[in-house]
Length: 107
Image 1 (cartoon, rainbow, N blue to C red):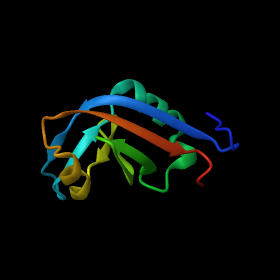
Image 2 (cartoon, rainbow, N blue to C red):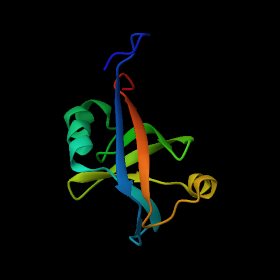
Image 3 (cartoon, rainbow, N blue to C red):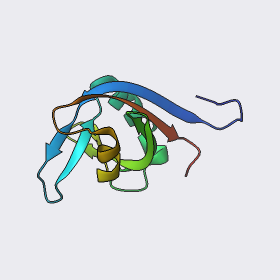
């Protein structure tokens, strides 16, 4: 979890199925599967900025972006911004490969 430059990061990769959530703020999300969600939970206290939200750098379909994970039903949701979905043609029901980095030194 320590990079060559001395920074501490948690790097994760996983496949997931994109969902559309109509909730109070409709949006497309990539749910984090159980195993990487457990790894995130282990570091969450040190990296959350409130309400369990965790800033990350994510990658999907060759597009890198910054966002924050939201805790939901025992896992985390990765919001997929409209600009990211347009560039990758991702929509609900698509299976995607996500990469994610959490900076453990951020706080």
